[in-house]
Image (cartoon, rainbow, N blue to C red; front, side, top):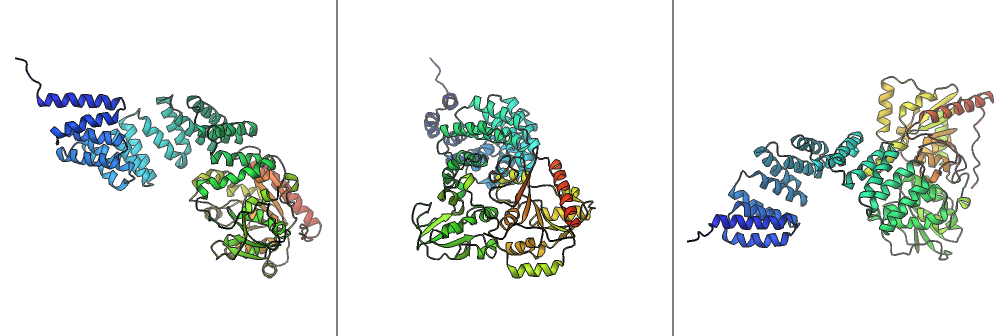
Length: 585
């Protein structure tokens, strides 16, 4: 008589069938087999746990949690179940609940690499990056060929420690050289580290492995731009847009490259794509129509509104007078620190701060859309010698405070504002900002230096360096008395020369017609073009450029020589007042 298979043997066979379907990616079919099996074995550990794994793959994470919880009732010390419980909670962003699940899995099995990795992902979700890196490190120690742990560690380290991120990505590439993601991510970090040729090579490999990924062409364009290969960068952006026509980042990057090469006719129209960016989701929406130059404005009221940084507002508020010449009543909305400064701006009837109630108006236009409205080309930039006037009472107060000038008075700004909520801007800020120690080269006779530097961490770093022993020039500091930009403007008016990195203060001084020596990074902002020493936006600006990425020293030496010559010329002239630009508009 033939022996019938036992109940246990039947369950094992059906589990084997379900596993085969699971391994083939046929998750629904696997679930059908398991659900039927569950009817006859409702407390079977493997059936319950396997159903949880299937639900996880089907992205039904709460169902996965429910099945795994039942499995843990059957076997409370089952480490794989705690791992999968934690992974499912991670997917639901319930990181606080996930961490005890991973911890329990690790308690049962201390060298459980996947549990350490999952815990690292949960800590990353809680923004506890140091703990996340430590967990990824323990995962790698338990499993030295753990590709995902290296990749995820690199993704965190790219901000915390870029050089270590390159090491992590390189290990991931070594383990799985046919995966494009670590090449692309590593390329972004290499660009940050100024290793542009290597970045391009990594992008090329990522594109070779996944030619349909538009993001890889963005990375390549970024690296090529830093190499000043603008045609190559534009070609990469065009390829990205061919693959993904609505790719806002590609459009925006292309705009800035067109602008810095003076191709304004193409750039300004394309720049309207910025409103499709997620960064502008919180931009106020208006019922009043957008004005881009077509409609007559005579007798109408138009709201010109800020949209980006303080420097952008200062640069583009110049268009207010042109709008007013069309017969419009102009209401200018600006950031609060600029309200008092711009109260007397030519052509403006009313200035309001960002959150102030809006008056009635007929049209509205963001400030950076005005070049499009006026069809601005490089040769038609509205370049005024001086369009911002400081408060005369405040200017007089500072004049009395400072006394009669004995030497050349020079204002200094070496760092822009730090924006902790915008990590994508950190790399640009780091390249734009000059280490304070570089200013030690400016020591010289017949010069009085004044700090115009506001904001942390620059102020604290300056004070720390001086306290530890500063060999550079003495710098007079009145910045604690500067409450807004109208105060800064009044102090600037009493100075002869402003030496500044690319900040709002540089824009302010230039808009006032003061002589500005701009210390510009190698990968210039679009508004300063690629190779010019002057600026069609500001007649009083002279541009000093880095010759190599991140190398300030040759530039500062040129500034020093020019400064000593200027100070000597002034001293020989008997300390005559320094010649400023015309005050005409």
